[in-house]
Structures are given as C-alpha cells and as structure tokens.
Amino acid sequence: MSETNTGWQHYRKSPWSWIPTLYVAEGLPNVIVMTVAVVMYMQLGMSDTDIALYTSWLGLPWVIKPFWSPFVDLYKTKRWWVLAMQALLGSSLAGVAFTLNASFWFQGTMAFFFLMAFSSATHDIAADGYYMLELDEHQQAWFVGIRNTFYRLAVIFGNGVLIPLAGMLQLVFRNELAFTWSIVFYGLAGLFLAVWLYHAYIMPNSEKGNEECGAENVEFATAPQDNTSNAVANSKLYTLNSQLKEALQSFFTKFPLRETVFAMLFLLFYRFPEALLTKMCATFLMRPGSEGGLGLSPQEFGLASGTVGLIGLTLGGILGGILASRDGLKRWLWPMVCAITLPDIVYVYMSFAMPSNLWLISLCLFIEQFGYGLGFTALTLYMLYFSMGQFKTSHYAICTGISYLGLMLPGMLSGYMKDSMGYRSFFLVVMGLCVITFAVAAFVRIDPEFGKKKKGNN
Image 1 (cartoon, rainbow, N blue to C red):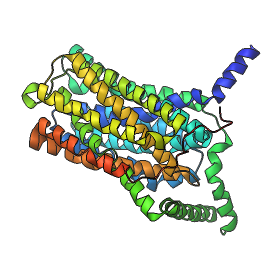
Image 2 (cartoon, rainbow, N blue to C red; image 1 turned 60 degrees about the vertical axis):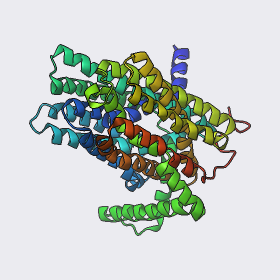
Image 3 (tube, rainbow, N blue to C red; image 1 turned 120 degrees about the horizontal axis):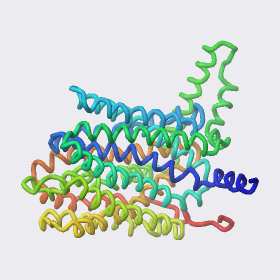
Image 4 (cartoon, one colour; image 1 turned 90 degrees about the horizontal axis):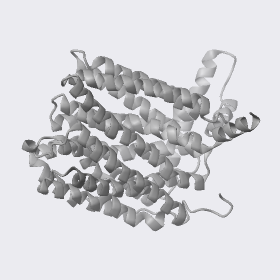
C-alpha cells in the first residue's frame, strides 16, 4: 500500500501529471470560440463576412489580456487563477447551451462566448505563468512540444469530435440545429467541471506560484500602512500601479529599441497568412460546391480537418520541440518559417481541382497542418525567449496579446475578401502574402544557445 502511495505521490509531483490536462483546458475554449463557433454560426445561416467579423471580435480578450495580467501576478497564486477560470469556463459553456434555443440566440451566445474568451485568456496567463515558474529553461524547451501537442489534441477534440457529434445529433433530431448544438455545449460544461475537479487535486500547490509576487510584500513594507481596510486597499493599489509601470517599461526596454521593434513586428505578422486562412478554411471545406466549397459533411470535416489534419499539426509540434531543444531555436528558425508558409499552397490546389476524394483532401490538410505545427514552435519559443527575466508572466502575456492581434485583424477582413473575390483568388492572395512572414523573420535576433540542453540537465 505504501509503495502504491509513493508511486501516486511521485506522479502528482511530475509535470506529466498536469501539463497535458492543463493545455487541453487551455486549447479547448480557444477552438470552441474560434472554430466550432464558426461552423455553428454557418449552419445557423450566417454569411462568411459576418462569421469572420463577429467571431474575430471574440479574439479581443486574448489581445488585451496584458492589461489585466498584473492582477494575475499580484493577487493569489497562478494555481488559484487556473482553477477559478476553469470553473468560469464551465459556466459560460452552460450559458451558450441555454441561450441557443432563445429568441435572442445570437446576442446571448455572443455574450457567453465573450465571457468564455475572457476567462480563457485569463486562464492562458495563469497557465503559462505556472508553466514557466514550475519548469527550468531546458524543461520549458523540452515540454513546449508536449504542451503544444495536448493543446492540439484539444483542437482535434473540438474539430474532430464536437463538430461530427453535432452532425450525428442533427441526423437523430432531424436537423434541429439549435437544439443539437445546445446538447453539445451542455456536455462541454460537464467536461470542464471534471477538469476543474481533477486540477484542484493534482496540480502542485508549491510556493513557486508566488515568486513573482515577492515584490508585492516588499512594496507593502514601504507603502503607507495602518490597520484599516482602506490602508490595505490603497497599499495594494500602490503596488499594482508600481508593478504595472515597471513591467511595461521593462518589456519595451529590456532589449535595444531596434531589436524590440523587430520583435514586435515578428510577433504581429509571423502568422499573417494563417490569420487570413483560419476562418475561411472551415467554410471552404463545408460550403456546397455551388458556393465554391468542397461540400464536406460535419462528419467528413471532422475526419479530414479535425482528425487527420490536426494529427499532422500535433506531429509537427512534437518535431519542432525536439529539434529546438536539441539544436536551439536559432538553428531551426528558417526551416520553421518555410514550414508555416509554403504548405498553404494546398488550398490553391484544392480550390482549382475541387477534389471529391476524402482521403486526398485529408492528405492536403495533413501536409498544411504539419507545416503549421512545426512552424508555430518558432513563435512559441520566441515568446518564451523574449519574456525571460523579471515579470515573465506579464511579458509572455503581452507577447501572446500582440500575436493574437496579428490573428484578429486579418481574420476580421478575411470573410469580406473571400466574398469579394471567391475562394480561388483569395487563396492565391494568401500565398502571395507569405512573403510578409519571411520579411519579419529576417530581422529578429535570437541567442544561438536558447533552448539547447545544458550540461547537468536531464
């Protein structure tokens, strides 16, 4: 019995016990808001222009999350924030399910999707901060492929299970679209309750979660204090303002101005072609042939894009983490740039050839997604690299906010562009714009040793 308990305690202390489920919980709300919502609104009769515009707005919380990331640094622990946001995510999923059958279904679902996005963005801050504080630099580089893998598995679940499940329920309930989607979202609410309970028990409750809050106690010692609640509140406000100013100032001054400008451009434009593709991929695959799409059913979409394609994404992410941890990010930057851009050509091919063979479509999606998974590793590691030092949680949140802005703004225009020129011309334009990714990657500076395994690390 004691051996069993010892083994269980060892499992609880291992990063393997919480990294996989933590990044499933981080990825699932994102894919629900950004992809599952696209398919749901398309089935409920919205145009591509409206879908791209409104669902891109849902990305706003990820863009502006740096503004409240200091609260996550200063109040409570990263673990507390993770658990609180997971409970709120479960509530917002139940809210979407409840309002889908109401007369105000669009306004209601959008409101709860925004709550979900806000909770998920805050969860991202806490989860990434917890990850960086619990692991050393080499472990971060090694586990980046693992965390991206389980993040992508959440995406596979969203696209490869939830969308086909909705399609099967629509067959059972004779195309009662709103009702079937509400069943799916009630199930998701229950799933997040289970994840919340698991993490409440399994995630290490160490003091590491308070390391970046150490400055809070120092500031309190120097700020005016007495025994009244007002003095305590003023002291916390004093600390917050001080820490926020210091975090923002250090973010933009930790490197020379020229290097900082190129870093911001890299974060903003590295995924520019992918930002245009993201919203229109799903509609291209599922719109009927009369509208220029391939006409896949939800079940076929789940297999081709949500399963085969995302397996490619997962394998690409694993390979990227292995290569970067072995040779460093700088060594593999240009292969990763090529990987995230050039495979987009498969959409040009499909828009002209209009293949009907599901396995051929799946192979095309596998190639494109494998490249994206490999190339995305460069962005993830670069954000970790730029965030090193004090206030790493806040700095990483700023980096991801800038990166999400680079997804949000092109995504808002993608539906209008597609509706104006059609899928074929749209995909050709996307390929031409891949030159932007090459341009911004040419000027970033990276320490050649970053990410490499150091002697003494296991």
